[in-house]
Length: 382
Ligand SMILES: [Zn+2]
Ligand SMILES: [Zn+2]
Image (cartoon, rainbow, N blue to C red; front, side):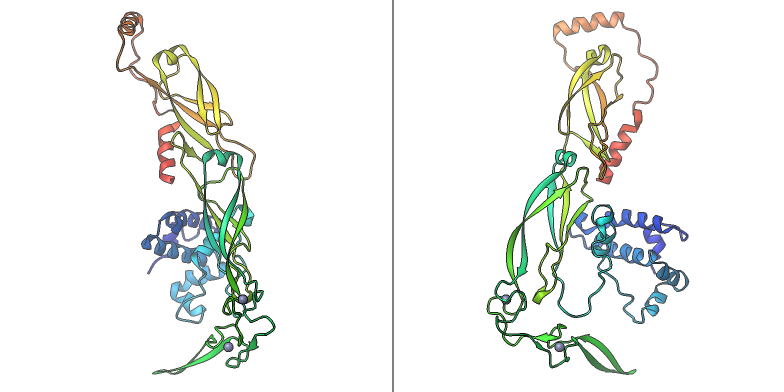
């Protein structure tokens, strides 16, 4: 039996905030969008989401604490367990958009019968690091199901109406009786005659055959705020598929993918950059042009700069999402030693060698400011 607390890696007395934080971390690791179709990741994603759904709800959590998973199933009054929302929807609901806009599926719950809501669609949008700095406006071509123009979504031929389903009397439900060794089992299922709609169409629309929808293509403007990362989504409400027979539209989810810029390693709002300099530049100091994410900047390398030293280009990093603050570009100086010398250079180096001071026995921590550990961490976080 899986332990929900263990799945999320939190203590049994963890606060709601800790649980949410822990879930976000593990869920991101197993998120289907980051694990190209891996069945195992998907299973893990479902598992941790289920654990999160239980532990985030004080009532369910207390039932779980006392009686475990079985207790939850009993409380829900069915062997199949409690109504478990689609794990992806749970994730999107709590972390989907930006800040407070993320409650995409919140409060919507499972529908009963009546017109079905259209599916939400996902599109991927690639951005460069430079676009992350300023934000971007893009026009997306979206292929979605639109409301049928002929029947305006009703599914019935113009001039005719849908009729109340005779099988279920319009409730959209039917009772199914099954005999078993325990006696009769009665369950309620969506009506098969009307597919749970409560209505039947005797004269289906000739264009959409009663679907109430047709294929369409439209252009959608998306505005991407500065400072996004590949973990962010933008939710455009009501821009997904139209629902069948007049159902409301689903949403359009724009999944952001920030392209790597091989020159930089991103660490939150900071960009890490490695700058090779010559021995002469390091010893005498120099002013060097350094590429930034959206241009070039001049960097003063002071005389006596050591290999591995960190310099900062203030405000040349990436903006923080939702603020105007921009991080720094952290420049790690790498002193390059020539591996081939012209006769002139060699004679100068020989002369220098006779007059230069000996190197100290030890040079203080070469990994100044933890540069490499941060680079490695940034790579791991991917
Ligand atoms: Zn139609
Ligand atoms: Zn029916």
